[in-house]
Length: 366
Image (cartoon, rainbow, N blue to C red; front, side, top):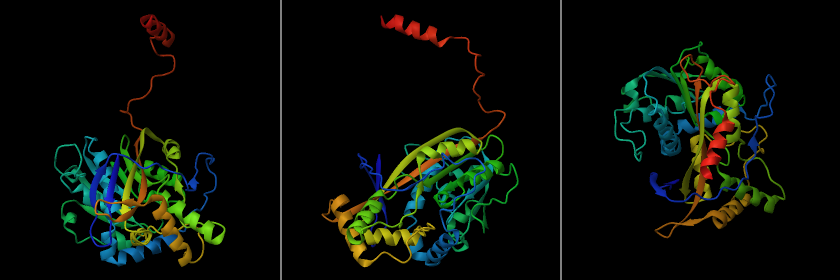
């Protein structure tokens, strides 16, 4: 299913559904964790201070920062929709990497996803005692502290100076959430282990992170433009984790009963410059340690715009030409091990031999 959010500089995003999903071409460098040995030194991929500066500068420009919350709100709504299937109260909840408390805002809605097939019900916030929202950026974390949704749910905001250290005791939380923040973590295996540590037994971890081929249109167009104008390509978009690694990471962190799935959110922009402007206003600019110094040259930017339009441009019903940007989101659910969880039977404890079942099936076919 393709969800298209039409984004322009002069009007808010609106949602509409289409029947097809565009073909994904892989241009993105992937972060691989599958071959990393336990206890191996952490490979620093991102500059944490640069990312903190990006978020601080973006959040201090309040109006544009709120205008580009459409992506984080959409991902948070889809994440909260997954919580509806967990029928239990959550006295203490942690939102790790809360940004502007997008999840808390969605939790107070009567229906997290307005287009959901589920019937209307009371807000999820009704079964939550309190939610601890953490982020490295105080300006972003406290940006909406005076908004009405703060009265509908008990929120405790905490600024984490180190984005990879959770200062919480074991078995503290009944639920841990995270939306659109984990893709900036250097030592993701360690952070997942800490999340597992602070969860109570048989408590869930529900998260969403950018990954895979996110922004493959922009990556490909920019690489082709640089190859044409400069004779080589640079690192302008941060590497992302691959969906195939997420299950392994959750297993290594001690989670059980895993669920991992992928969603594409396709946003239409008037041009490449509007897309880049929104990414900057989100605080999602490139923070890779090996990024190219300085900005992208005007010549390369103009070439990128021309290539992007030629390869991916789409004509809308009103005749205007827009460019799509695909944000690929990896959703994951893992449960901390608990005594009441279903467990596989011991090997050899079965009463029926599979060979007998196959023979019986072959006999019916004849």
